[in-house]
Image 1 (tube, rainbow over the protein chains, first blue to last red):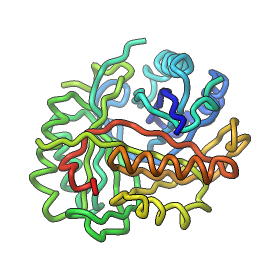
Image 2 (spheres, chains in turn orange, purple, green):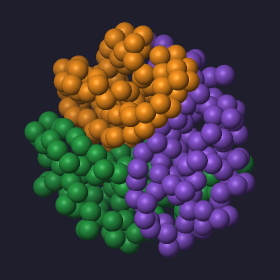
Image 3 (cartoon, chains in turn brown, purple, red):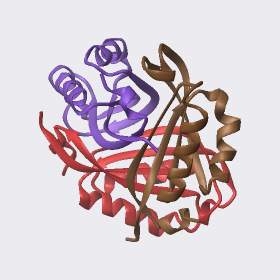
Length: 100
Length: 100
Length: 100
């Protein structure tokens, strides 16, 4: 079994950002993404008192691409949008195909 | 990039618990949560032969809050409801805002 | 709190595989699974230029069962279907019930 250590970046934010964020994720070097509908509630930071529709985006990518995505989101969305973003270490089947 | 080590608690259980569990998660110290619709099947423990509608709840929180949530769920739901709960180590952008 | 180290296997693939894959996951030793609807885009490997409906399947299981599932998917789906599969280390509440 060929497993490759990569990063799983998860972004939960407002659906209004979808058209802006998804092309940017590819532009920053990811080879794909998966989106889920969600609902959420948060009471801190930009997400203060926010409840309602959310979208979740998962991206499996190299550490460098993960860093680029996190930096973009931190600089562009955190002040004005409900947004939580985290990274997890994952082992990916045939993972080399998800690295540029 | 400011990343903070935190815990991601994931609970997959019956939707009937939603009104009971979500306020409890905030009461136990979490600053927010995200919910997803799901379907599931399980054949062990309380989830024995259970198939059908599930909800998934994700909570990003400190280790102490994660422990409080896990203890609450283990004591209150595992005997009588289909429920699977796990914890993952995550690195969170501007993570300090998710700690009380 | 009784936490058990296990594996979380996540498969994101085409919904057409559902009837084939879900019984196989149980046959390979898992005690259950959770399914989510998703949309996705990918531009590498079998997922090349694929965009549209996806399903996500999460399985919490022992390392041996995880390996069996990953091997099955790698051998049967990667050539002909859009499919991304990864594994994460998780700590599971009362995790012994998810091991055969």
